[in-house]
Length: 322
Image (tube, rainbow, N blue to C red; front, top):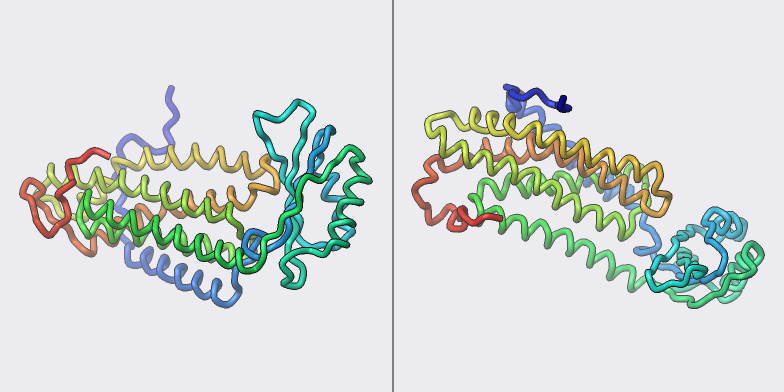
């Protein structure tokens, strides 16, 4: 007996209310931009600057105990992560403690560093402090720009790839879906002031890849059906293609979400922002591959006879497997 999240053959009309779904997506994108401009993002240490203290101990690391020891010092946001390396000895426990910048200063004061070390020694007498490094506002600003360039470069690469593999109408639909996913995810982070750091940037880039994969699966089936049903209306071809890939789409999304929700509950505070962004991306990406990318393709139209090359269509690499 096999589990079926979606019936074997579905005949859902996904474009019956496409004007409403596209309008809702556009409204959410505008709202996300407004939230970003008005509320801003709650940047983590990676983007605001701060100090990183690397510790080593022969005792097992207890993140909760370390955090409780530092909380009374009032040093602001503190991120504690255990560092793993195959070369470490069995009794070598290394931690990275990141503390946000104080009052726009490049680093916390030596007195504050000493207070932190004294507090940690009180709960772990075997602890040793291997290094103290600071990230100033200038470096943090460079990280923000690098993160923006990374996301834009990923979206630009997608635009070129889809254009070469399919047609420009497909590429615009795919890129619109990616921009939709990234903007709404950033908007939710802005509204709820969830910590935004480099891990979230990694999640955004992963979302771009996940959403693209979902969209390409649908578009590949659309291309096949355009060749098979040359006289069928484009709307019917799109509906047929989405219905044929619906089971695969839902199964992939559900299994991914099962893993992500497990990480959200059990993974701890360090990766919570990354996992939350991924969950948003999977849900929004599944929606956008159907109701944004395909809906835009329907409105732009597409060449119907794929047996004849079109020098302006950007399909010279359409038969290349990828």
